[in-house]
Amino acid sequence: MSVIAVGSAKASPGVTSLSVGLGLSWEATTGRRAVLVEADGDGGVLAARFGLALTPSLVELSGTARHELTINRLQANSQLLAGQLPALVAPGCGETAALVLGPMAGRLVHGLGRLDDIDAVVDVGRVRSHSPAAELVKYCDLLVLVARPRFDHLVPLVHQARRVVAHDIPTALVCVGDRPYPPTEMAKASHLDLLGVMAHEPRLVQALGGGLPANRRHRRLLLWRTLAELVHRIHYRLQTPTAGHAAA
Ligand SMILES: Nc1ncnc2c1ncn2[C@@H]1O[C@H](COP(=O)(O)OP(=O)(O)OP(=O)(O)O)[C@@H](O)[C@H]1O
Ligand SMILES: [Mg+2]
Image (cartoon, rainbow, N blue to C red; front, side):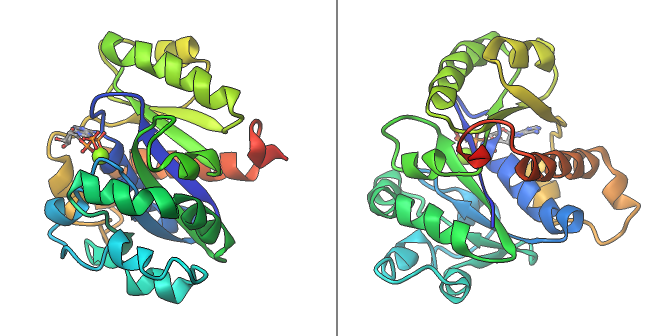
């Protein structure tokens, strides 16, 4: 299966929200199941934000780290977000999250990659060379860097893009909103492919918390259309890798 890492270079552009949205939209667009993994070394917010329990979490999964990651182990340690999406949540405390994630990140990405019929959307938080999730970024099939189209996001994005591309990590850009800079300019400056622009949705958390609407008419709302389009482009890109180790 594919591992899609979603992260940022700086600030809080909307990585977690996009990860949840992609995860919720994944199966309806690709026909393949998805699991959402919160691998943010600064600590998780999924449990608090979407009314999930504090356990099971990465902590419990790390207890089984000596064993191979099977679909059963993954499911046993996941919770259903919005009643739809299996989510492996990170502990809210950053120090605990970093402590469990660091030693297991490598095994997690390879274990996820070996599971059949299910793709993983992994929220890796801030992408840094010494982040506890660094191995997840290094061996993912695609890194989606998220940024707001603003000057203060541009400079760190350009630096981070240069670094990950130099490490041969297949990477693409998603902008959240389209102002004040055109997202195409952000892509040009960072030399990244622009996968798309995430709609600016003020009631985003509430909308995501309700899950993917069952009603097809509601799925035509801008948010869900944008997410379906992004999933489609990511899926296409995974099948036709153009750069990085996925092309090997
Ligand atoms: N597409 C969007 N439209 C409107 N608001 C958004 C959007 N995406 C994220 N937000 C808002 O921005 C804030 C940060 O979002 P989120 O937690 O997803 O970002 P993040 O990049 O994961 O942050 P962090 O680096 O702290 O983990 C939240 O208040 C969220 O509701
Ligand atoms: Mg986040």
